[in-house]
Image (spheres, one colour):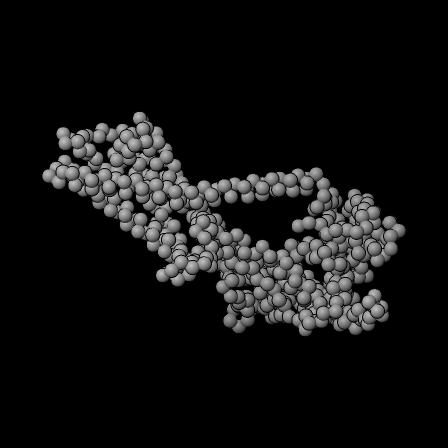
Length: 503
């Protein structure tokens, strides 16, 4: 979060100086105190005080006379400036840059490894099959010598089935992403490499815009309710717990020109009069809450069948890598026999690979190549390919639980605010998007959170269920309504146009 830009830096620094002297005594200041210490206009002080409160994490208190008292920590620190903040920002920028480059390289590597090794293993298997069939056609009478060739043939046949799987995968892309299955068409969806990335890494954060959506909901509510909002209402819109909301609403005050004020009975409300100065009144009919819910994360946007194919391809690579590594470690370089008729006797795929590397690629000692390039590397990659989605799947579940809890706060706080004089835990209901796994416990926690802000009295109904009565919260709502009514009478709007530069 970046600090809201301050137009009058000189005045802002004078206000900060006034609070810096006060913080040593751990006392608070009213707007009038700041005016006395800085000789700034009262309107200027009221404009900049919320910005300072946001930057230095001030607390707001209300005196007996109804004045707002700004109290800063004994050792205030800026949330946006200073060497510590600069170093954290620099480290965050470096970390994000390295992360982006690493992810890009890693994605390319995964694409090459998954498809490249699969194709390589298929070519090796096909070449072995061709050699086996050629040897069999040269001497059909020597079947006793080529008993291992039957094993080779069955193994390669299995690989042919795998190749068919791959071709079916390609068809599924042509059908799902390139139009009709019968003929190629213009691409309509994501290509293969993006689908692989979706399976391994997911599709990013679906709530990147949640801050903007919550701000828009906040502004709409402010403009429909005479520019006034209470902290419980703010908590309902943002889903922030009381302690978090207490600091977050100061950030909104700094951003949108709001200021805390006290009602006649000392209730703190937040007033954003400047947001009412608008010509477009289409949103003024908005009177209820519009709390945007956070979207749940999905494991992948791919169809389930497509992810299954990726799993099959990776499993083939895993089996091949394990097969070559096992034989390389336990067999070494096999001895290839040649019969009197010149027929080469190869019993399995591993022997064929060694023979091909020695005679066609001219590698005298193919053991290191097979051990690492065809064994250890694809085996490690395939295990890694499974590990990342497995870990991410657990992360997605945990993240969705947090998202559901945040959404539950929005719906739960709204229920508590509406039924404040008679609230039961069973009154808090929510759709699946707002229902954590331990739903009953979490809605009890919501009542405790609100209880920390406004202490309720608790009774028990005839069925034995606790009933929470938030009398203080009800008084706050009544004070808010009275304050809001007075504001509505004093709001004059922007008035008529008295000058037009085009006339």
